[in-house]
Amino acid sequence: MTRHGADIEALSDLCTPWCVRVVATLRIADHVAAGVTDVDGLASAAGCDADALSRVLRHLVGKGLFEETSPGRFGLNEAAEGLLDDTAHRGLTQRLGLDLDGFGGRMAHAWSTLLTTVRTGKPAYQDLFGLPLWEDLDAHPDIAAEFDELMANEYVSDPEVLVHSDWESVETVVDVGGGTGTLLAEILRARPHVHGVLVDLPRTVARSPEVFRVAGVSERTRAVGQSFFDPLPSGADLSSPRRSTSWPSTSRTGASTRASSTASTARSR
Image (cartoon, rainbow, N blue to C red):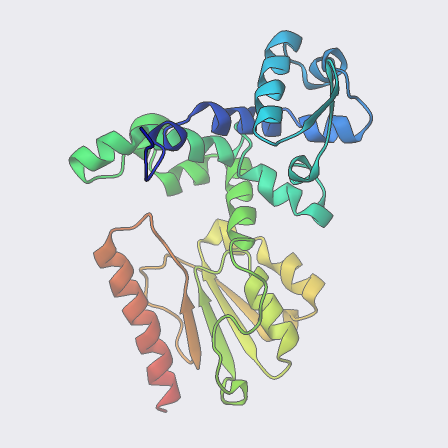
């Protein structure tokens, strides 16, 4: 009998996603790109077991990630190149989201708390990691830095992203939850008459000066380290609250309303 609709087996597959994360964490693509192609050499370079690695790689080859060029030897295909620590392939950001030793591991393991969250309606992140998300990031600066980098690349660097109307009427933009200021810097670089205010947690905005310096917009920016829920800076012609799915919906709605109200009040002056 022919079955129609979703493939439950494919939808529930856990093997492939974890294999992808394992090879990303072990930097297998980078080792292959460096010329190490035999599985024993790859295992030695990655510090892992050759037989187990071989099984993982052969599974991924069957899924279209990597190639087995000859028995026990592996090569990169276009898909595997996406795992390279190479900004030309956007691989660094990609790998950060998959690296089980960093924030990617936090994201992967957090899914195991989904049942608890669905049953209780409450975040269960702290049940697994000992602290709520933001406190956990404060306690682990290296992981927090990876989180910030992932958030900085979450949105396409398009200076039209915040508004599609007449930019001539906009003098000041407040990017609420703007991370390290990557998007704001892009907007200001494309719009020399616009000034910007970056709002995010203190540990995050502390990394923004270098972003603004490289973009050449330091003189037109101000960084404010605060919570999204504190009173927002006034005087903006445009405020952009970022997506924040880890907060209760009522809090997100309230914060977004305050951001819009701040900008509206400034425009009416």
